[in-house]
Image (cartoon, rainbow, N blue to C red):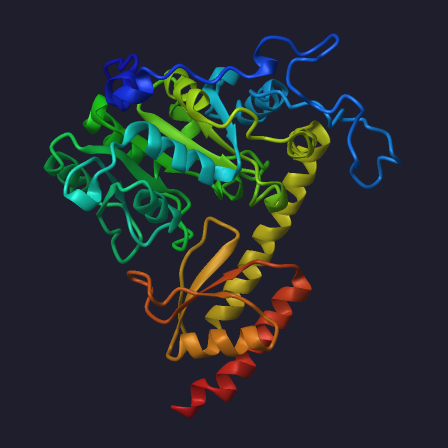
Length: 391
C-alpha cells in the first residue's frame, strides 16, 4: 500500500489542526518545590484503603498528563506475535474506549447532521451502541452498512457507502469481536477497507474483546495492532475492562499513527487518567498481571464451551452463535424478552438483544463463574417452563 504520511492532517477539522493545546503545569516541571498548579501542598484528605495513611501516590499532585509508564508497559504487552514496533507515541490512554470514540469524532468529523450537512461515520449494525450515541451527541451523520445474517462485513457495501458520501465520511467503525455478534472480523477484510479508502477516512477497529482471541499459548491472534505502522489510516481501540477484569477503573487505549495520537492528546482534557487508575493498570500489565490474565482467559474460554454446549442441548434454543468473546448470543424459540425479564426479576441478569438487526428472539449472556453459569442455565429452564411453554 502506498504510504499515507500525515493522514490525520488531511482529514482532521481545520480548527483542530490550528488548535494551540492547553499546556498544563506538569508539561513543564514535575519535581522540585511545586507551587505552580494551585494544588494543596498539605496533602490529601484521604488515601486508598490499605495504604495505612501513607500517601504513597502523592495524591495532592496532578498525574502525568501523558501516562508515559503505562504506555510503555502497554507497548511491551502488545509487541508480541504479529504485532511489533509499537511505541508510546502510538498510544493514547483514556477513560475506557468511549473517550477515544468521542475524541475521534470531535477531531475528524464536522458537525451539522441536523441541518443536512456535516461529516459522517459508517457503522455496521448490529454493533456497539455508543458509536451512534457519540455521533448523535456531536451532530454527526451515521451511515449504516449492515452485517450479513452470519455477522460478516460486506466490504463492497462499505466502500460503496464511503464513495457515496463524496468525501464526507471520515471514519469507518469495525467492531471485532463484535458486540452483540461476538464474532471477530478477519484482518484481511480490514486491510481491504483500509487500502481502498486510503487517506480519505480512518478505519477504526474496536477490539474491546480481542484478548479472548488467543492461541494455545495465550498469545493474542488477529489483532489489528499488527497493522499499525503499515496502514496509517487504521486506529485500534482496546480496553482493560473486559479480559483484564478491570471495568471499574475505566482505562482504555487508542493505538494509531503518531499524527493521529498527537491530535488526540492535543484535544483531550489535561489530566484525563487519574493516578489510582494508572497504578492498577500498570500492575495489570506487569509480568504477574499478564500471567493472571492468561489463566483467567483460559478458564473463561473453557466455560464458554461448556455453556455453548449446554445451550445447544436445550430444545427451546434455536441457535447459539459462534463466539470469539466472553459472551454468547443465542436465539430462543419465542418469548425471549419475557424470559429475559423474568430471569432478571429472579436475580439472573442477562441482556435482551431481540431489537437488534439479525438478532430475533436473542439473549446475550456473559460467561460467569462456573457456579453462576449453572444458576443461569437452571433459571433459563425454569423461565421457559413458566413462560415459553404457555404459548
